[in-house]
View 1: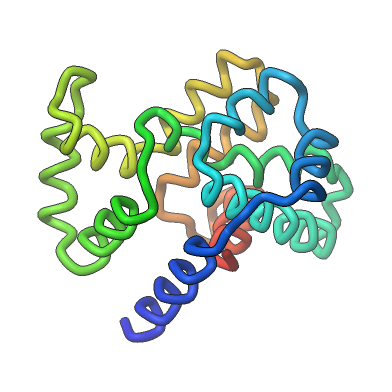
View 2 (view 1 turned 135 degrees about the vertical axis):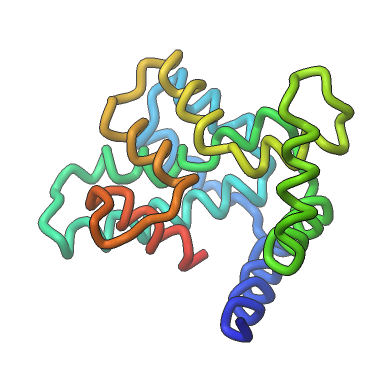
Length: 179
């Protein structure tokens, strides 16, 4: 439990000062097509920076496991949180959601349940989108005609990942937890 708190503090510190620089933006343009980049751009800057870090870590992890398709790995890392764009969260709001999910999960889940409808009050809708962002993102990416393997791994991103999960889902989980 203490290690999770330390991880969340480190993650919050990173996100607090996360800024996309020209090199990051060029790297993203190099790895995403126009519809994919449009979805990526919907994310707040701190989520974009997190996704760039996740993508680069995913490429390293994937290559170590013999996956040579750098573009696919980059796309997976860059787009894994795109579902969060369905309801824009500020850094402070995200911190509250993460805190409640980590320390009072029944409250977090109840609020997410209350936000399940599109016309739910915005307060509850943010919980729902945060909790279900993987499935929401998979639907968005499907409409943008992103590769099936990327969509499947992103869909699983919202689930419990085990050693029996597909390799891409395992690698995404590991890369996502580095940033």
